[in-house]
Image (cartoon, rainbow, N blue to C red):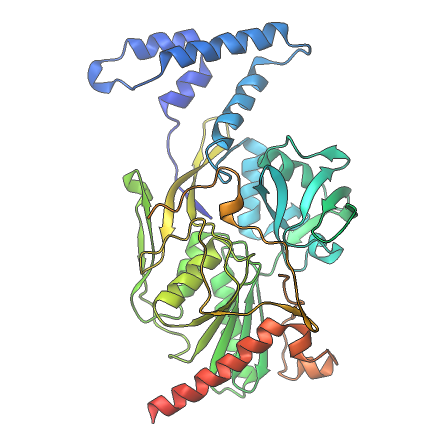
Length: 445
């Protein structure tokens, strides 16, 4: 989740890392008292001593600029799993990933106990097609151990030119030996919205991630569902956010605003004024109050949790599935003078009822585990609370891809397995939605 905030580099970073340490210390010492900053001078001297020692005596010759950049990365990475320093190339990649087109594998990753771990593979990408799963631990990239890689370095290694191969070694729960995957990189053009008319009047929309055009695409999907329903309003809707790792904040806010007449959507708390935000619904309900079910699981994170939490607290939708990931912190992107950026955690998200999402997640109203034919699927569970250095609270497997259909009978034409076998959670969501529609009708009489 990103909030694009442009801020000037603070003297504590620019002066400290832009000039020699001794000069920075002198500059701080000479400031007027009213502008003085509490800088730990002894620690700065220690840093200067270490820098000089490494530069002069380390077995390999390392440039001063490389040492300083590595020290910046180390400082930021120790804060929490989601803060990080981005060089110019990494900053460019981040902007591309939020626009919906970028080169790579198509997976969202994070650090769990210091191990690079798959949060969720993105629909219709090389990673998803190759068989990567949520919870997979990436232990090698092209033969190199990931144990000592930071998150940004690992992501940078996995991205590359389209049509080039990358080898990943995966540790997966239930597998006795590591799994080897060779995946061909591609330009990731993700369509974040898919839809289908499950039954007459019963709509289904799948959101794989939140991008700049996600809400616009969702509105188009709603219109298409009405058209498929013989131009009659939908009786109910299943909104599928399973294995949706998040994305841009505005997308999640606008999505909730599409289903609420009024009320708070989400608010944030942080140390500085810019980090304190509140969002209210104002656009009106595009479903005119028709019942909703929201599907979530352990791969639903960040923006997904904002949507689920807001619709749950307002009583607008029934949330079913499994507890969500628990990524409820705000990352502000602060461009730097060198063309890079600082991704810094500046606040926590809270649902309208004051629940902190951070490291807790959203507990569904009805727990429904995914099934594989007859057995409950045992999915290696990862959550924000298990990430090394996660922020304190402060107050499954994804379904088979359903492609957009122009026809409500698409499932029958495809001769697919019954929904209860193909996707048990969706099957239960549809059953609950039918019950809600019946109750709604009786209430209006």
